[in-house]
Image (cartoon, rainbow, N blue to C red; front, top):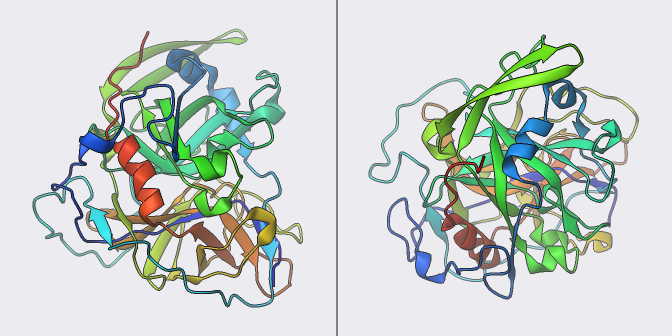
Length: 379
């Protein structure tokens, strides 16, 4: 029962506090390792590229030429009937930044795009970073954490399963938009370089896409003013502080129902299997619908994904699936990340995106990451 699936991800979460105080995460179990695993099933690695080097690498020319990340992960099925994913414990949640003390929010009749969502840029490891074919991007979102420095995305947007290592030159730009002139408006809230990648051992070691999620601790952001002199770019920078203070952070939830109304956000740009290319990746897009359990895709060890009707293509990978999203506050609860694109009726057009089901294993990775401090970018 399976088709062509492609890397595009969805989030899935829940709304009950479990061992958490409002807006914080218990740090006792977070682990103390800085460059190694904090516990047996959580892989935490510091970025190999120095932060300043990563930010400086992404000149306006390179950002403009980065392509959507797509290494051929897609699935085709006849229908979308799947088995019901079951929770491995009670549901739990961490509130969004700003909602720790009160759940009251204003209402809005239109869909306001979240400031938390943006693009991540990276270069493929063990390759020549000067070669444009190695300049890639995915989607991601800021999420609540103790130090307001946390980015949620797909594991395949941080880790190369072919080279068995994490990507280089990894940075996050929230609320990214592609201006008509070099760098105009592309980073309204600054650029945030990776310090520590946090993923599940079953993805890193076993390439199991039921664990295709990752949480990245980023340094405090900087705003860059680029000026071109001849063929070289020169920069001046300004520290803008913590990610969560600047754009907020989505809540996080796990062990929820597989049938939830959610929004998915991302920056799709890739082609459908038939070659049609309806998206450009220049601006953020969204889908809305009710999730459902997806079929098994053995090629990717995929047995516990939830999906929603959506025509997103490559580039949307890593973007959030948000439950209980409020347009007035632009916040909700991360319940999945865009992981796989599906063609469920055999017409060579993607019509669903799916995410790993967020359960207690997901919470372990989140909790380890949510308690890691970063601070200012070393210079």
